[in-house]
Image 1 (cartoon, rainbow, N blue to C red):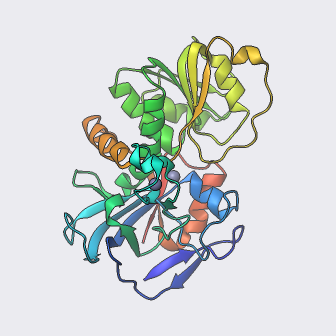
Image 2: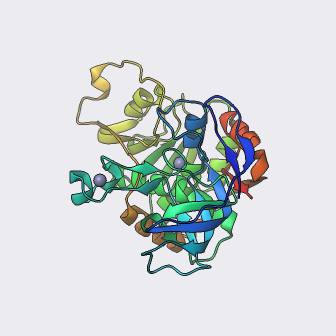
Length: 327
Ligand SMILES: [Zn+2]
Ligand SMILES: [Zn+2]
């Protein structure tokens, strides 16, 4: 198999030829058809997340075709198209797993972080954490659903009944969530990097009711806001933008420090919450909703060997929509 491998955080990935691996008990092997490039991959390769597996094959938005089944795997056929997300394994026995919060498992494994991911021609996955992708949609177009879509969905659920929804950072996640939110009948207010006219136009094209710079107030108070950009200063900005009792949802795994702010911004029962990982139920619910909402993702594809370029483009904000690697 071929893979783009991270040997040390902060260094570019390098293409390597590796021995083929056989799936272990409960695992499947996939022929990777596409793998999305997520901001979390940047945090991993830049060394902003602690203790990655090393050497590591990044990538946790994997779309692939089952090509081998390990012992004990049932319910999956060779040739089936599946998607493998960030949460790649849980112990199933800790108090969180037993109470329906497997996203908070005490002994989790994360695809492309603490276990090898999909920047490769082949990948091994825990069969329990592979979602059937039997709907329409090209392989590359489905890839961003596996994290941008899924975490986006969980953060959207955390926003509650909010009719007036703010989205801070209009990248891969927001471009999917905006479509689902509009389908649900919400109004979407998109906040982009100040002066980023292209991102603003992108948000409006995808159905946002309003789009402006993150340094601007919305035209009316929001019921909830979701922050996708890894910028702590957006937390007080979003608190200012939500009404009494409104909620600010932080959807990223990593964020720069949140600057101190006056208590009055939180006062009147405003809330700040974070969203971590996903559950398998989130996957089932989201993939159904995405099909019903006819979510159409916008992707820029890169050959696998150009993964570093895709990461650079994401880092520099040169993308509209999502970057996807194709082996
Ligand atoms: Zn657990
Ligand atoms: Zn991700």
